[in-house]
Length: 184
Image 1 (spheres, helix red, strand yellow):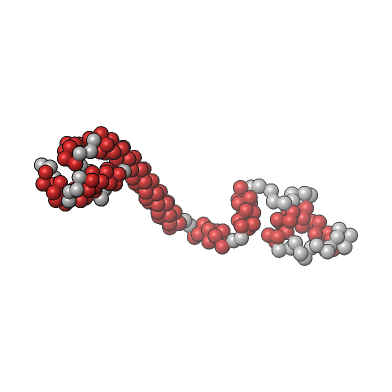
Image 2 (cartoon, rainbow, N blue to C red; image 1 turned 45 degrees about the vertical axis):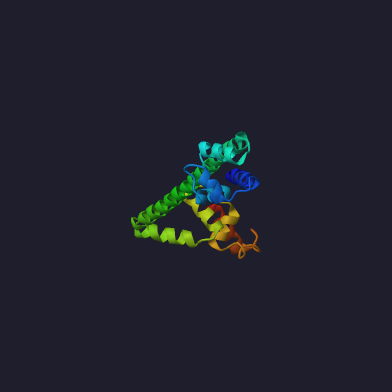
């Protein structure tokens, strides 16, 4: 919006047939360079200077002042938006620091593990997602389903074709499965 004020100043100046230098000389406290910046929207002029520009160029003061007020409210909105963006960036930075701190803490806790715990952790990290789920069930004392047990023992495909009436192997299968499932 500062650009709107600048456009109005330039229109008023050119409408009066003046150069930036000529207008600046007629207004106390304004240089041609400052006037040029104001016309490009790079700087804002005071209300007193805007009134003098309006008087000198023959335009109404209200046209320049109302444009300047709009510019001021737009600048406030832009500043608020910048502050919000800065807060978001700060929050992201804090989150990144927190994540880094958690990773550091995890590394430190890895360093305090016993040898057996380290082996379990390494095996867990290398395991498939199904194996991880089953390991957690076992550690929590939960019962595993028969297919999960067979997979763990790598017997799922080997025992498929064996029935209970198949002599020793059938009895072994029933005994094994019964024992694993807690049956007698």
